[in-house]
Image (cartoon, rainbow, N blue to C red; front, side, top):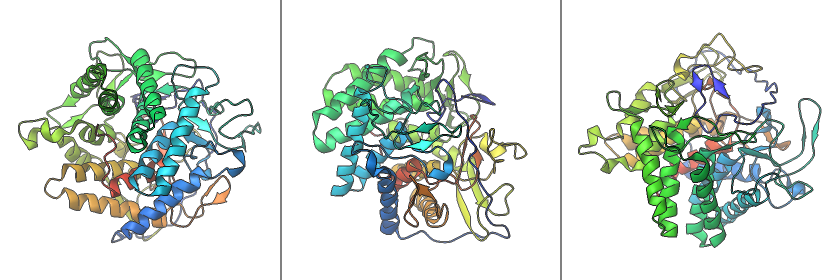
Length: 470
């Protein structure tokens, strides 16, 4: 899916053969003078409610088998029972970070479902996972019934064809491998390592490029055609995955592959501005706009940049300061196109440099609302909070706590009455992906719907769990 300002490098791009677009209707809520809401939610209670949401998203279709993934968004997002591979990988990591027996058991179930998808693909037997799967029945916008759960009647994994989520992105694959490697460490089960190695082998075979900028390319679309882009974000993910495979297998070949991905990431560094660019369209020229948030925070989490430079002020961790300054937003009811109720306010960061200058007079995409330049992207806000905690410089912990407090207020107050699989979610459970509709600048948006990915990243930040350190 191509955005207005260039190719969609992020794992969130829709890389299938086509996108069935439905009208996800969103009504603005509230008006009037907003004021900053104060204080964080009760930490342990807020975390428990986050885990309650993850469990509800995973258990939404009890009549459709025990092999299951979690539905990524609440029903109101209009994506029905779509379960994104990336979100489920994060759910595995968040369940493990909770440190409970139930969390470990749920992580194992999700890990086994990823392995099931890998070994029961309807068309391929090469270790790939698709961008997303269906996990429950629904009737599509065109009136066509999708009757199956995650496992179809013929035993194959239920690939998300109606939305076109049939391609395979290197970043999604890497996160699944990271989740499986975490399960390997926690359980010692060989099957999880075998699955992660198959993922790494697929990425090496499909993604490796000898173009001047190097690294690993984006992946394939739903027609199995290789995509030409190379993403900083994806290669950052590979720094972790390949590093973990090197440690878990003892095979030195993964070290060489890690070094290749890391070299690409470092080529995207802009020392004058103190940030990382998004990637390249053609393997030769750096794409300099838009500049996304996650290439700033994930690089710190993956590279351990505290040891990368001679002085702290010159390290790659400066990218955290760039994100905190250049992508900072405060959303409240008086903002144009905001859907935040009157009397509430949320602070954090938005998706990219394009988000803060988005055209507020035009819909984000067909059938979608107009964007709010000040919409908070809560997943990215959790990225930043965790990275600041990991850096632990002067003032970082205080800043991280303030960001986490904003996320916890959102869990308390936004997305009330939303459902998964037709069932009303437990109150105050699950973090919405954005405080108001926001334009990423890559051709798609985020909206105030409760989201597995945003909730999982919140839980990782709250528990100080760095999922990208090898």
